[in-house]
Length: 215
Image (cartoon, rainbow, N blue to C red):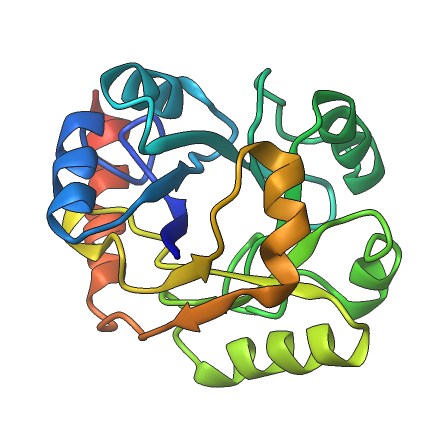
């Protein structure tokens, strides 16, 4: 099976200082087979990383919509922040991307979702994130898992790594696949290895935000 990290960041995100090469090095050392790099409203870091390791890296993006964040893999053209969820999803579908939803019930984050807003899009996405290692309250992940089960939705998990050492904290185990359509065909049979990150990792991204703001 392939060991897949679905949610991680490089310095293309304003709250990360991780260089693509360092992220790749750590992912390889930890035995990851695929790495979906999902920077905030940017594909620049993922594209740079894919050029360094085309076999490992899948270009993704974490996109802030007017209702919450969308998490996508196999993004071919960067999507700006601030569109409605429906507009964002339509553009992703035109690209053939695999579409998930970031930490949907995490009320401590700006990118969390209200349940009514989430219900409006569940038939248009391929999955929702049912475990995010950076959720401060484990109940947020449990709510996402229960929501996915109730609505027969596939699940993705991810470390949400903003520093290289976090990558691979939570991974998806999938049968061999190729491309977004291949991922869609195997995602319902996914297995997961999950672990919460220490609370202090949020200070890493807070520090990165301050450094990037001061530039």
